[in-house]
Image (cartoon, rainbow, N blue to C red; front, side):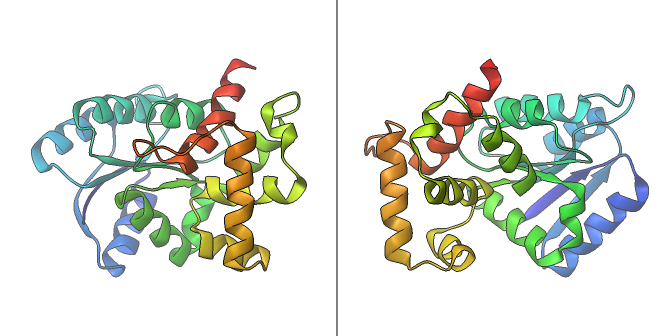
Length: 217
């Protein structure tokens, strides 16, 4: 696994590089702005970019815009965005239209090294990693949506799905059997109108369904 880190804080940038290297992940470059990120990816062709949402010169959404551009240029490139605060609009913009290899985490999540490295590997493997705090805020705002059809337990399961957990991971978190989790997920797919298909990941589609509704609010 080869990674490029884009973060304007030198301390955090070097800290991220150290964590990844300790986890056996090769960091091929570290940069401090969006333009340098674009050049680095073109030159080094990494498997993953870890990108701060807000970067110089304006400290608004330069990192996000660079990540979206890179996804268009290199569809197989995995992207893990980092943010200081919960910014739902950025999570929606990143995930809408992309159903594999994307993540959005709060920077505080990096403090849990094991969880952070698990998220990195999950995103590189084509999965998703959405911060639990972002998921929580999105679910709270789902009033009047299709999610009202879900039971409280199904909403919990969907929340863990959005974080990127496997069925086994959800079972462990909620103290359920694997069979019970499978039944809840099947019910979620049915209630959200997601029939079986060979061409799409229904887990991600379930997440995107409420993300897209949030975008319309």
